[in-house]
Amino acid sequence: MENKKSHWETVFTTKQPNEVSWTQEYPKTSMDYLENLNLSKTANIIDIGGGDSNLVDALLEKGYQNIWVLDISASALERAKKRLGDKANLVHWIVSDITEFKPEVTFDFCHDRAVFHFLTDEDSINKYVTIIGNAINQNGNFLLGTFSENGPLKCSGLEIKQYSESTMKHTFNQSFKAVKCFTENHTTPFDTIQNFQFCGFKKI
Image: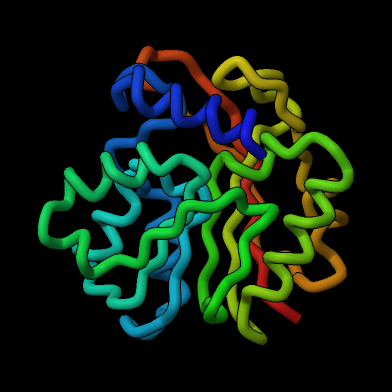
């Protein structure tokens, strides 16, 4: 874990949001998906690899009250807290590698945009799948976004694993039923295009 952790600490202490490819000014796709679920404002929601993403800002703005943000980088979470100011006190912040995460609650909605594809070995992937399966309530929802087969092969200097709709469904079919899958182009802050594969799942 330490090598991964040090890599991401370096990224978040040396680069600004406009210098990393995953930055979105407003996470429209994720928020649209979540709002269509019509969850209670008291639903337990976790953003995996949330870093200093703006998803937490949007969740707070919409009135969600039980938000967790997990990231391997403490520096990333500190940046988000600083940006939010006093609102940061309304959020549960977790510094952890997702493959070592031991949740203290179960979640109604789990969100991961661009973490899962960094897990390239079978052991890490299996740990992730098991942890997510156990962390989500019965009939809970999970939105996962990874690089598609038309997406990049590397990100932030690291190899990634691409996914198609079928490989994503197969990976999670023990605990989840796919509800909606789609691809989407993300325009980075430096005007390049990254193709993402998204799948929305429901716990079975």
